[in-house]
Image (cartoon, rainbow, N blue to C red; front, side, top):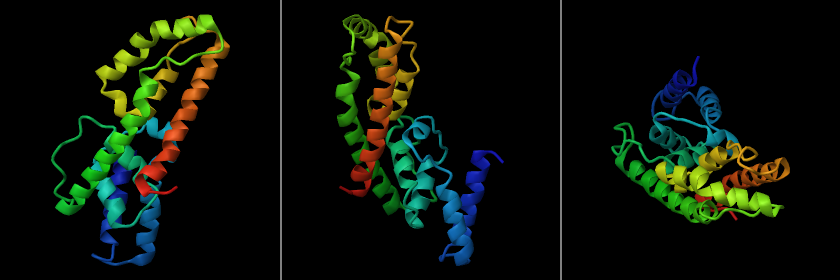
Length: 202
């Protein structure tokens, strides 16, 4: 079964077995675990994640007190620029408003964190490599980011940066690897910071 159909089936079971409907606690708890497992568990997985009906999934997570998956879902919503502006009729208006508010708050934090990194070519261990990186930074990083409205999409943008052939653009292999490692570390840092931003943990 593909992920979309599995998600629809698990979501349906989650609703039906909830206390508001058939109230089947054991099956409901199992459905919550299955639902939670549908969503990414680390930054690199989330960078490649696609989700239809993310607003509905976030609403289900909140309604059923499913904690862990709220982080990837909120990030996904915050990083999208082409989501349907009209909330699903399945989502109560007050809950839809709360999700929108949290999404905007997270988006602002992502932009504040990522914009300085995005617009500043980083140094490397070798002057020639630093020069090569700076020479191609506009065309390989900044321009695509602007075209894709990527200031609020740090995980996806960092993943794209890691995929550039920096050696072919003049960096030595050691410096190219160092940059990829740094960008992976930044993905992990954003992932971890989201616990504080979303759940107010310190």
